[in-house]
Structures are given as structure tokens and as C-alpha cells.
Length: 218
Image (cartoon, rainbow, N blue to C red; front, side, top):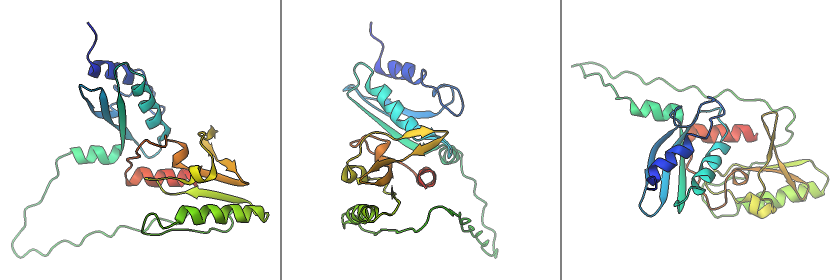
């Protein structure tokens, strides 16, 4: 008798090693909320710490898709520290009569990081989608490269990266000595989350993970 889909999923996850912990994803408790349907859909949450390689999410999804009977695989990515803190019951102090509200601690601004070899930065941004940010960025980058400038194009759009499509690059970048090597097109070095995940795969990332990815890109 064939094993249930849930059991087959757990067996596959137990064969995937987490690069940071050296343990499999099941014993290291790096996967949570594993759910399957009778139609073959699988969905789970992958917990990543700030220093983890986001490519692990793609590896997990590919492994799930190769399981016999799986018709669709979705991997949600969550920050490990934030996920664990949300699981702990919150404690509240009871209010005291005539007690002044405690002043909220101010969160310090992040320390600026110097990139002395980066040169000039041109930021193209907008609070609205679909207004041409990517189009303007690509044309600026290619035009500057044709004029002889050394240009790098960083796609900071995590939820809908389309710079790879506009630049005509699709293959994943190489990683050498724990550094991501940008691809090159039209004389421009290109880096984007769209190079690390499939085009039709939704990217469900949270704040700390997003900041870590952008920092790695920089």
C-alpha cells in the first residue's frame, strides 16, 4: 500500500540538509505547517535565519515537486527568530491606578554602511507599481554602460522582480566564496531575486529576510 502523501513529503524533507545547522530540515525544525490536499497540493513554511541562503527555499520546492502525486508545491519563507517569538505567549502587566504610561523605547536608526568602491548611486523608486521604475532603471543602466561607465543594476523589488526579463537573463548566478556573482547583459552587471526563484513562484518574504537579501545584493 502506497504511503500517504504527507509521509512521503516528510521523508523528502528529512533528506534535505540545512547548510547552517548541518541537520536535516525535519530534525532541525526548519519546516513548519506542512499541509497536503487530496488533489496533491503541498504547502509549508520554511524558517530561515538572517544568515541563511535564500536559495534553500528553491531547493525545497524543487524536491517537493519531484514527489510522485504532488501537483503543486508552495514554500512560504518566514524569519526564524520572528516565528519563534510569535509562538511564545505574550505577557501583559496589569494597569495600576494613576500610573503614568511608560515611555516607549525609541528604536535607534541603523548605522550607515560605507561602500567606498561603489561610486555613484542612482536610485529609481516610486510608491506605486506599474509606473515604469524598471523600464527607467534598465534604460539608464544600458545607456550609461554604452557611454563607457561601469554599471551595476540591483533589483530591489522582492515581490515582483522583472529586471531579469527586461535584461534577458534567466540563469541563476554563481556563488563563489559565499559571494553571489552578478550576471552580465548589455555591459551591465545584474542582480535580482528573480534570478534565484522561478518566474511563476510567489516570493513570500518578511522584513528581516528582505533586508538580508538586499544587503547581500549590495
